[in-house]
Every structure is written in structure tokens, then in C-alpha cells.
Image 1 (spheres, helix red, strand yellow):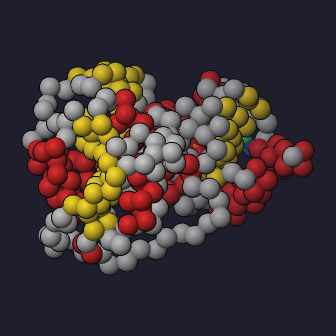
Image 2: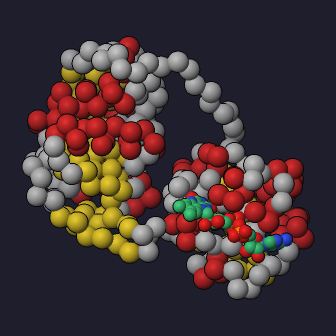
Length: 310
Ligand SMILES: Cc1cc2nc3c(=O)[nH]c(=O)nc-3n(C[C@H](O)[C@H](O)[C@H](O)COP(=O)(O)OP(=O)(O)OC[C@H]3O[C@@H](n4cnc5c(N)ncnc54)[C@H](O)[C@@H]3O)c2cc1C
């Protein structure tokens, strides 16, 4: 029994979600191999070889794999899939783009968004926006799985010494091509990797107020900024800051929700945070039911006071 983890990387380094996925892979039992499919990605392959618990890194290098195009990465996974009992992807935008293609081609059911490995064929996954946990057992010969990264600790990025093996890269299938990307540059920690998140909701009322109130608190705490969907839909915050069922799933050490009611779709993305602080002027707001610390107050007064006190 051997598990293949599909690494998320930028050709130079391995992204954090890969480390959590390796932990899930180790829990499946057997050896863990990591596929680094990229272009000029030797540095990423070497980084993958350092991850504790990894027995082998398979490095496939070709121009068609440079940008993680789903069609080409799926073909690369399928080229080596027959050696594996489990194929694990992080449940990120990238992983979720490739995994279903692999599962469909292998004619197996994908097991999505697992939060626990019970045994080699049995897994837990949240359903109904995290309000129930389903235990699913798969009889398929190959388990194609996406891993909710907040459900597993990150494997140590160093300490391993896996061999790096070169695999023949599959041909570019030409069904899609990379045109360009616009990557927002920020000194802030990335939302899904941040230890502290300050999130704002509809109560902020405008993009200017969101920036004026939430940003200084996040600056003070070295935190990432998040937002409710209402705040994103109203244009107060960019789309990639949305936390929740249809946004990012986060589990930081500290999550501060200011002017967020706590709809179940928002809670689905943050209720596993270690400490939750809610600032809301409505004592009945559902966010208080998951908060470790609740402050019933007007955020426009409370947040500046908090910043001053820090
Ligand atoms: C299929 C589906 C998917 C969804 N996915 C997501 C998702 O991923 N993420 C998400 O967040 N939502 C999601 N939603 C939307 C969700 O249902 C809520 O509409 C949304 O979370 C509400 O955002 P909010 O809490 O900012 O706004 P509101 O619910 O309007 O809450 C605003 C809160 O601010 C408080 N407030 C107002 N003024 C102040 C003040 N001055 N000081 C302090 N508090 C104040 C109010 O008491 C209220 O509790 C989804 C909905 C659907 C149907």
C-alpha cells in the first residue's frame, strides 16, 4: 500500500497545504510518495524530499506542467496512478481542479474534503456546511481523496531525506493554455496559513471604513485580513478574502470577527479556529455561540480602543 500526494508548489518551493496533506497520507498507512509536476521545479522537488514522512519524490518536468494546468497535471498523475492505493490532493482550488479528473478517468468515486483518516478505507468528512460529520467507507481499488488542510497538522518541512526520482513527463495535451496571472502582492500572511485573522462583515458599511477599521488592527497583530461574503459581495473587501463555505476554510490560533453575524455559511469556514473573538452590537448574534470571547459593542468604538490598548 503506497499513497501518492500531489504537491502544490510554485516550482521553487512547496506550499503549506502539501504538508497537511502529507500528514493525512501518513495516516493512510504505507509509504508516502510526493509528485512534483512542474517546470524547472528541481528546487521544489528537493524541498519535497525534506518533508518528514516522505519516502520518495517523483519529479516530472516539462513546460506544459509549468502553471499547474489541470488537464496536464491530471494526465501526469494518471501516468503513474497504477502504482498507488491512495492519491491525495489538498482541497485547495488547485487540488479540487485536478482530483475529479483523475477520479473520473480511474472510474472511482472521489472522497472529498476529508478531515480524518479512520483507517485505510474509511474517512471522515464534514457535510451540511460542517453541521454533521459523515464517515465514509470506500470499496474502490484506488482512493482519490481531497484533504481539508485545517483537519491535519502540517508535517515537518525538514528532517526527511527522500530519494528524488525523475518520471517521464506526459505530453502537453493542448486542451488549455496559460495566458497570464495577476498575483496580488501583500506583506500580510496568507489567509489559510495565518496564525491570526481579523475579519470584517457587512457592518463596516464601505470599503473605506473596512480599510480604516480592520487594516490597522490586522497591522498591529501581524494578522491576515478576512471578510464575510456580505462584505465581499458589497465590494468592501476583495473576493479572495472571503472566509466560509464558499470562501476559504481557516483555523488560525486567533480569529477576530468584527461586525459579522455568524451565519452558518461563515461559521463553516472558521469555527475550528483555536480562539474566536466576536465584536457585535447584537447580543443575539449567532457568532457569540461559537465565540470564546464576545464583546457586545459598536465595532467603530471597540476596534480603535482595542488598537490603542495593544
Ligand atoms: C450557498 C451560500 C453560501 C454562502 N457562503 C458564505 C461564505 O462562504 N462566507 C460567508 O461569510 N457567508 C456566506 N454566505 C452568506 C451568509 O449566509 C450570510 O449572508 C453572510 O455571512 C452575512 O455576512 P455578515 O455577517 O457580514 O452580514 P450580516 O448577517 O448582515 O451581519 C452583520 C452583523 O453586524 C452587526 N453589526 C452591525 N453594525 C454593527 C456595529 N456598528 N458594530 C458591531 N456590530 C455591528 C449586526 O448585529 C450583524 O450581526 C453564503 C450563503 C449561501 C446561501
